[in-house]
Length: 316
Image 1 (cartoon, rainbow, N blue to C red):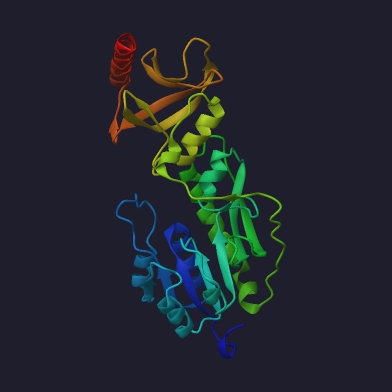
Image 2: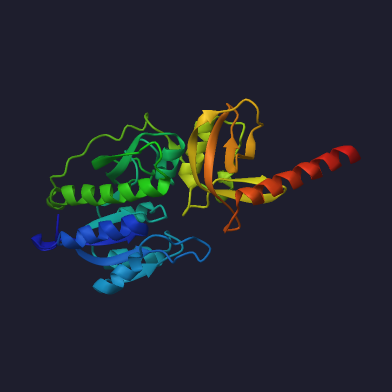
């Protein structure tokens, strides 16, 4: 599988923490990384994760960025590197057929395939209340996350874990998965098993607007949304008087109520979110535009919004 029976040579497509950790595994495993394709950081995005580009600078590895994966220059650069393998570790573009044809290609996906195929798999797993997920190394095909499974490692999702916390576990699982199977992968003896696409499902990307809370839902559903998008992701949010308010920290409350309408309330000096089934979220941190909102400030906002609603009703 390697050029002239020597060291395996690879071109790596990588970004994010998983990109950093898995690239380190290849280097520790003696793989000659000839080129790394990565992304420019988006200035509008909260960059809370590690830098593949910084790692490559430290290790003297050539990097390149192409906005379009179908750019002929990208294909030429990959071919010029003469790789024995291609690896994709949280690279954000699908690779076209011409690139995948250069060498055997493998992708690290942040779920236990075939579950949660597609974008933002950790966030979707938390949103759907899954109690486990993991990392899967699989063969790359034109269809996303559809190739044969080479290896995978499971991690638990605890009832109060946020997606950020779960992503940390998945990053470690990705490192363990690649480290465990790399020798067999390089010598051509790594196992394969069917990626049964009749199971699981495909999920698209998520936008900040998807974090809007519908308080008419049951408390567990609202709590799962909060956990799935809690900071450093954009956060689950609601509005009071036209002002967006983001849940920063919250927990499911043990008590329920039949006396309060769904939405935000201040009860005994504490902020709570009342849901459609009477269940509640105890909200320990709420923000508006990144500025903390106290229980008294929320009380004043709710009173002002109620007064404005009464005036509007009288006028109409």
